[in-house]
Length: 350
Image 1 (cartoon, one colour):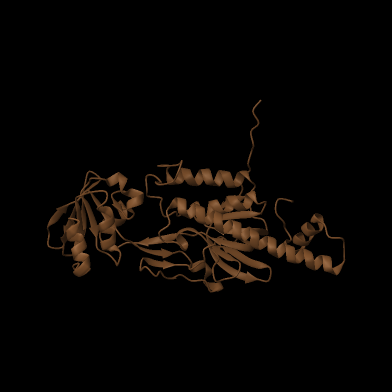
Image 2: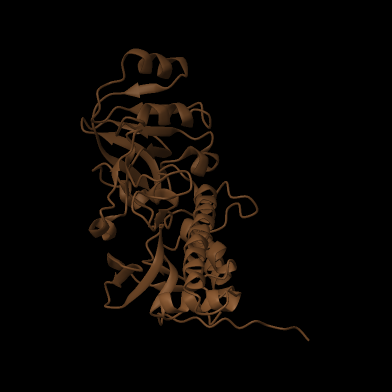
């Protein structure tokens, strides 16, 4: 007889959790998985707007190469729930500091308390105002050569000049095709060292503003300039401006700042994911704009381990204080009761 584990899926929230994870992508789910395996009470609150939703597959992820983004998320949710964690649909509206942690209010009126927060809300890609870009995004309008380069290899690739990293992007995509054209668009035509680099790699430069994309039979076939001319292209790379989703934490004083590389705005965090706000960690694209799915998942797991260590340190201090009061002999059971008193509604009855 085969034993089948039944995992109850519910959106009913408890009053208090060890950790509330805001964002249910690779970073958030990976962090939640690590924490649930550490016997922490965890809820992942996911607004359901993943950055990579338009992509046909996730690439560069060992043992899951090409898996669909939605399937990867569903597998991750099942794994978190399998260890007793919750994953609920909802959007966080505000987060407020409390004496013992945080009050997390959802836009639908629900609220929960958390001892620690893991911010894994990802980012938003802000695209140039060119008709057709958004509808083709993740298909034949792409941004990352490591995510999409293989799929458009040896094609006629265009690179739209949209920011300080655009020339670098053109040099990268040259690795996947010897037919790369750089459209300066609204930027000045490349000069000096940049012009020399493009010329040395055989990358053609087309000056003039791009007006629209040419689509035939649901395929990109060219880029139309404002002068009416069309340059045949099969794929277009665009360096979007990447902006971390952080508005919900503004009350805590945690805001996105300009990334040193000029790629957009991110939440600064140290190597462990710890932010400048005590009790709040960040992982994935919200802090590392260039992180792919594998890197985001690894960062989520690393931040979760640090969160668990931080909670252990707090619980140890509480247990020492209780022991010093001499109320009862120190024991693991006493430590559990101390933590229960702090939290109220404790994790899984453990």
